[in-house]
Amino acid sequence: MILLFRHGLDDETYIGGWSSGDLIEEGIQQTHEAALFLSKSEYKIDKIYSSDVKRAMTTTEILKEYIDVPVEYAARFRELNKGLLNGMNSKEAYKKYPIYKNLDDINIAFPEGESMIEFYKRVKDDLEYILSLDNSVIVTHRGIINMLYFILNDLYPNMDKKQFGVTHASIHALNPGDRTIHKLR
Image 1 (spheres, rainbow, N blue to C red):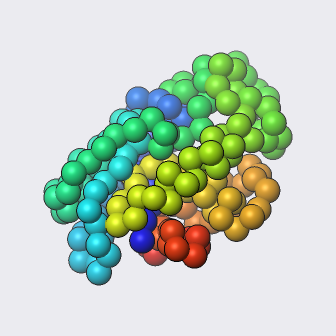
Image 2: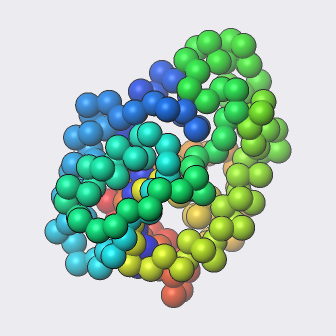
């Protein structure tokens, strides 16, 4: 089983993506609760893989307090690259780039970033690698987990971020044998 752990809450007044924003206090607490849940679960965990974005790395550091296994950080587990908007204050970003406020076209790329369809293809290209990480936790972002739901359920991607229940510090189980995915917590 591969466990997908979304990072805890960060400051949502800023654009996420590949930003250097970190967890806020509520996110730290969420992460401790989820890490405790995992430490008491029956799942075998041999390694933690993590996005190399700050909020995911902090989540991983907290998880390591509960589950002491090797960690590997990798850019392949990063969120959608929002290019010039990464880390910008949301109000300023949407004033400067209003088209992205309620973007519903998966083919439009963020300036110097990627589009949702490019992101989907990036995750799909990594699927076999991800499926090879049995008995691990992948600390990542809502976008990666959502893309895995789309891919594994043979659904065309869309911009609805909330449809699979990928909330902060939520945990999702991916069975590499039958290629199913579901929310645990």
